[in-house]
Length: 114
Image 1 (cartoon, helix red, strand yellow):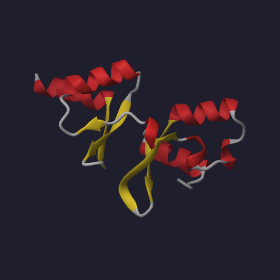
Image 2 (cartoon, one colour):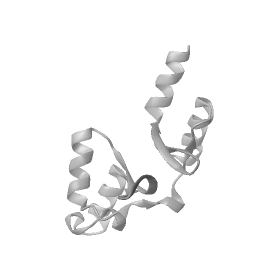
Image 3 (spheres, rainbow, N blue to C red):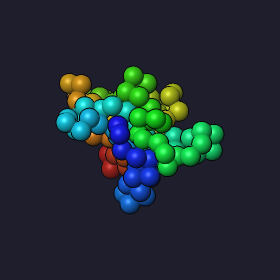
Image 4 (cartoon, one colour):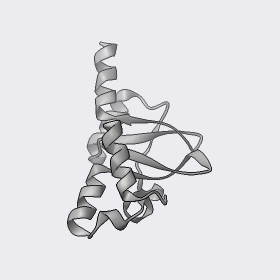
């Protein structure tokens, strides 16, 4: 939550991910928010100097995050992505973060299944 924006962007760059899950330092399964490339770009373009910010300043807070259940079927996940206009979502089980799924992951699973 207190991670500097510059470190966030560097982590995204190194991991080749367009998103990061923000967790509590004491409990890595407790999701606090999500940061996406879109969040960073919008804040940089319309909200001033990103370098002075921390994750909590521009993340999508946990109350606004669309989550996926581990038991959700792939087609249902893709429908959620389309309906909510999102490209990825955290996977939760018993209110704990257990992973993250993207559109690419879901499509790859469909291809493997057929």
